[in-house]
Length: 468
Image (cartoon, rainbow, N blue to C red; front, side, top):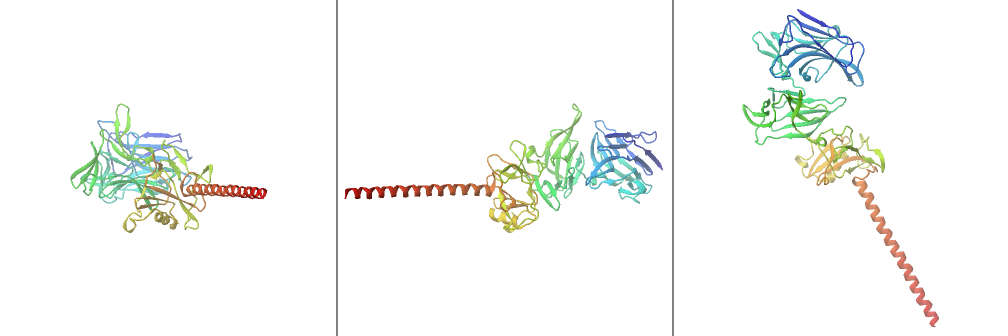
């Protein structure tokens, strides 16, 4: 059994360790059964720490190269500090796959990668605790190979693949990789309960913002030819879409791409190529080009992305410094809440399960608002030509030039709350002022007319008495 131990002292930020051995050089792209490597975990937590041991590398004519590594890095989970342990694949400095994408393995003391004699690839911590495994024990696995495509595979003596990283997509799709229909990429913003997903459906490719059990679409690509999508593949020309073996549509890339990414920070879908002149990856395609079209362009709920691309909060109760923060969880019913229309804004996210289908396709604006009022978990609604979208959160709203037209975006507020410059409250307030003004003028006219009439009659009577 080949066992390699690597110990890391506590150093700030990034520590990269290259394991170069006479019988297992980095230039080799495979690891045999019996291999084990240990990476020491610091005893004291340091924010931003990354310790990495490279295991194998693929030498390619075009830089950058693929490398496999185990990584120990500082992480925060529910405001607690930990160190996570993962198996990673890197293209240059970009992590394009990780075993800890969906579930992180937290450990203390050490991080161990082992390819057992039985062919199971495992990550272990203290006391032999297993945090991740390939599940290939007893399947005849002999080697761990890193292919030129960046696909990490476990193969048997006949070179047949028993496990591969391509079957477990993360937030990145590599050149040459295929994703079949009904699979998806997922991306998780830091310190957020929300996450993004790119989903391949039978008739389209769509981006979603996921919140608990609910999801909201914010971009989609429907092929011009109506055919069922079997799979899609990233090639030298872009993202190609197939029905069976036949390509029938594609999203073009101006330069030969290296990978497609569902961005963790923005939720945008980008295709990247490598610029040799600049020595870095650059986006050659973006699904969304305007920042206000991104679902979380403003990092706070109840904030609006303005025409200038900046974020502005909704003012409440005529106090220009007070931002409306919602705080209406569980609030429902006409006695306790009301819907206020935000004029000149629309939502860039659309509820997947909207009331615009089935028996509700002719619902009116008033009924749309009442549907939200009756639902204690609903906080906003958007009405558009008979379609009513209900929302469990107020995110992704932007200001539109020339007003929102027939689209009416409404938020739920406590009864009597005045939204400054927006909505029914503001309209009611202005209407009351107009009516009161008209009534006051009418009363003044009546009083002046009465006084005038009185003085005219009094003068006539006085003149009549004098004449008599």
